[in-house]
Image (cartoon, rainbow, N blue to C red; front, side, top):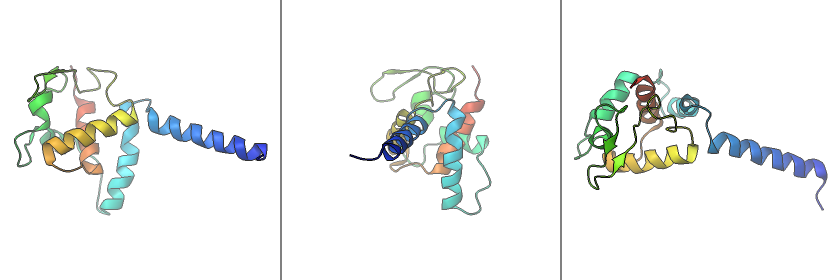
Length: 139
């Protein structure tokens, strides 16, 4: 049998990890982790940019789709999947309070959508720029 302090410490560590990774209180809570990763990837990183995020959101990046292809050029409005026609709830957190509040969903969203738009994973800077842009979009 393990000593109680060890078991308690393990449980508390696991709970803290789950709380920090599974649910973010606010969409902006994702930015510090992406900022750290962006700085690691590029020592010259100087912060996220809403202007870069908007440009990224609307660009096709050499493929057929942009983020705006499904989420519209106004991410505070409902969109429609370009291939399936499925209605998509607004992406901007100010128009949809559920957006960017669950870490697993956020990572899944970026993984799927970056693959569709870029044919690769998004970088931390790209994620941070896009989220910074979306945080400024108002209905």
